[in-house]
Length: 217
Image 1 (tube, rainbow, N blue to C red):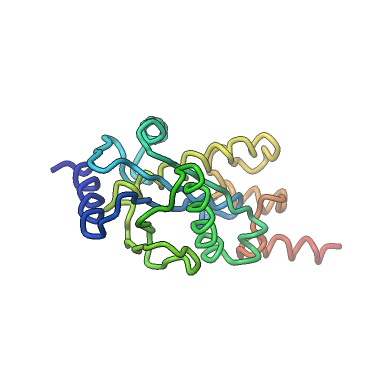
Image 2 (cartoon, rainbow, N blue to C red):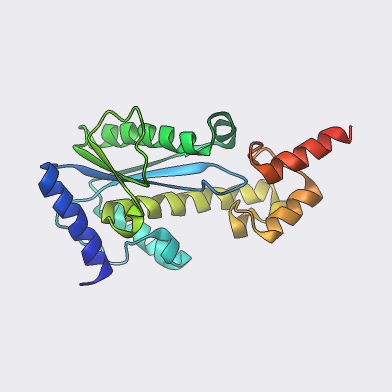
């Protein structure tokens, strides 16, 4: 059995067990970044569908993610994504910002779908407290569920695009290459240039740079 078939069958089994007509997969990208938003994706795929090339976004090359994104966009009954900006990440903390984003993205998806979802599959071990929908937390869900894998691809592709656009405004940091993750290039640029409005002040490397800049004045 191929990995894509296995992921699709996992979702179909849960649909049957929960008697869920509409199943949505939820995942996020960008929690470990020093800059930029956390992006949350939500995807509803038709029952019985096996999309080749759809698996955990971290295992796919850029070109394969883009192709998978187009396939998901064309096949999905509905999909949605939203950004939780760095200011809200700092205010809530990154975990809570992610969970709040999942609550919001389900509402956005349901408006597009025109009905409530029957079951939400959430990547990880925690469920959003105010989701108010039947839901299951799936540890390493992007490697087990086709719907969660699809949501991870949607979130990753759109977040990378956002960071490539922001690179034009803040070219010193190399956002087009590392998309905000704490690579050596990014950390060196942060030390050299200082923080920009995209940086998350609650993250330690950024907080140190900001504190040092304040002491200098």
